[in-house]
Image 1 (cartoon, helix red, strand yellow):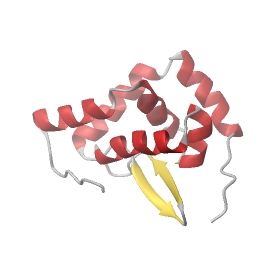
Image 2 (tube, rainbow, N blue to C red):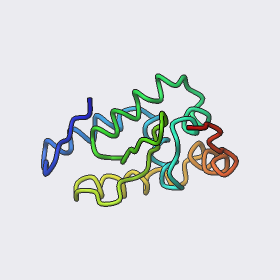
Image 3 (cartoon, one colour):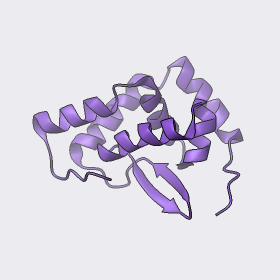
Image 4 (tube, one colour):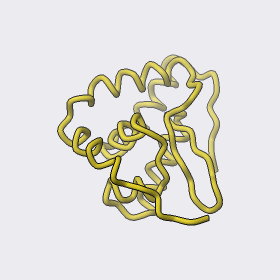
Length: 121
């Protein structure tokens, strides 16, 4: 179930976003999505996690408004939001500024071009 929280600002927005980025793998996923839209199968390969674990982490960041998700067949694709609310846009910009030189994020970015969704609908 997706919880849509619109026009939330102030303490509520900060708390919601903070909870969504309280795990390093979620931050890595956000950084990876700054490169391009990724299918859940690509995130599974990149992060080296079980499908259910990736889906749970991505559900948390999606519910916070930090990513857009779309379904294509049985697969879910994630991207950074195309039209984020101001608190989300500011949070994403801040997160990206903090991780842009992180060695793990840089390695992920080197690996992303070689990851391709091999799933068929």
